[in-house]
Image (cartoon, rainbow, N blue to C red; front, top):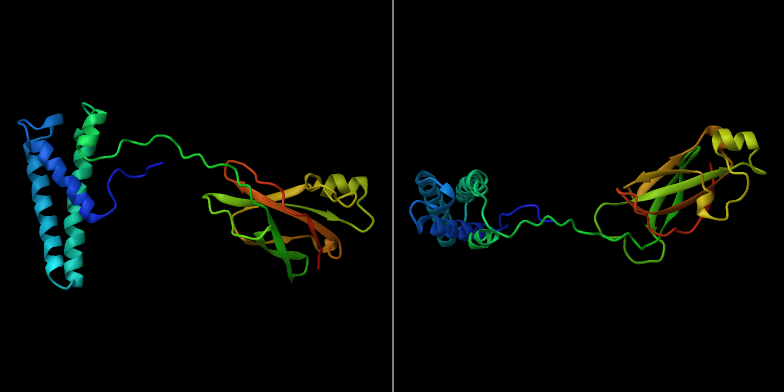
Length: 234
């Protein structure tokens, strides 16, 4: 989705301002009810910005010259934003007017990002007693999913020696047996960090933790399961 209607470069912004000036001065009164004082101010800011750019093109740039350019363009952009906000919507410009002034049509269509299709796993470390650390990495080689807003959902379960009792299973969510599928892991949390850790109770030391990770975004869209891994809790 488009975030700003102004072009990114200074030269493109100056070209747009000049186009505005041409359209606003081709008839009297100016279209869209823009007062003559605003047109005059716009032209003055255009001249100042052009002068600053021309000076920079002829001489070696200095810090003071760079600041003069930033100041001139900052004032020009302020006039353009104010003019657009105050006069271009009441009465509203047509789509033809929008293009005529050099502005892109407003993009109101959200960018659709498909759910991830990569798989991730983790390399286990033991940073402290009753803690497992891990580095999340692509399970099938290659790179991390480059699309925006992805994080990871980490699933895990703790298996006592011989399996949990029914009471322990209900109260502490300990596993009754070795899990076969990731869906059997009772606990999870979401993270955007590639390095994370799980902290366990001290009486869970020497028990086995089973872990499985997959991509998930802020909307809850999930990728495929990664491989199930296990480690003895230190």
